[in-house]
Image (cartoon, rainbow, N blue to C red):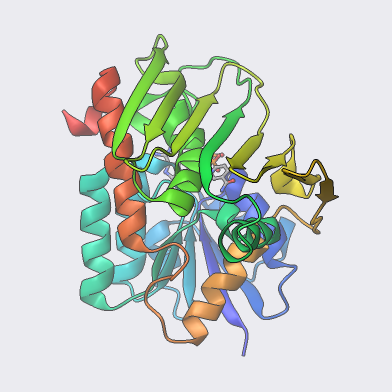
Length: 327
Ligand SMILES: NC(=O)c1ccc[n+]([C@@H]2O[C@H](COP(=O)([O-])OP(=O)(O)OC[C@H]3O[C@@H](n4cnc5c(N)ncnc54)[C@H](OP(=O)(O)O)[C@@H]3O)[C@@H](O)[C@H]2O)c1
């Protein structure tokens, strides 16, 4: 039996995920919901979606749905994911899980109270190359003792105060949109940091347009990262230990080569190219969890999504970035 998906929202990520669901033989994109019926129809035409709903309320009430992908801006994740959970649907919610830790707590409490599946769409964690990284680092200890992660993510987004990346009412800023990835990478490998040193550049609308931080762990490990919507910094990462380093070049997450350099000077390069945009792996994981009757993912646990937001709250507090919903 295929698993029936509904997508809530018709923006950028909704399109990318819809394309990738088509790659999974056991996934059926059954419904889409938009605040505007014409956008639901247009999306439905593009992706051949049988049920098109002109409101999110109608979408989540669709009796044929198993799981809803919440593809709205961060500021409304709590509202929309709660709506879907309360209607009885499992939820894959875009990153970050909510606007802040307090909202995440409410959402997680709803999922747990109702015994329903909820996961933050931290899609990079499910890429095939991440299986290689975990195997090399943890199982094969190919880097020896790992002491350093350096990761960056940056793009140039032209300034528009109404765009969700700049609009504080939509949870704008580089941290929540992009910084969440290197943060989650560091959490995946090392857990939450013991101390943090950070810096941010705040733009005209009061959100962080560029930010950087050093996470320090009591065992001497550091994770150094930055995120920007002002600078096309690419997306590279280096993971280094006592016996070697792993280097992900610009589009490593899209299947470009990854390089392992060992302390004997030898280098191995490999790539894990894939069809589509890369969201099929998280979607397949969600379906695997649902088929196993799980209410939470063992790879992207809810407590970790909450801890990520606690760290992002602390960073924003240091920079003086607050959202109107928080005042
Ligand atoms: N995983 C990834 O790689 C990735 C990439 C991009 C974004 N994201 C995440 O996905 C979420 C959406 O980002 P996006 O780039 O897809 O944004 P977007 O292009 O602006 O689309 C957001 C969609 O959400 C719906 N929406 C509901 N309430 C809204 C509101 N108050 N204001 C604006 N739109 C609203 C709209 O659909 P209707 O008008 O049809 O209702 C809109 O098309 C964000 O949380 C972001 O972090 C993830």
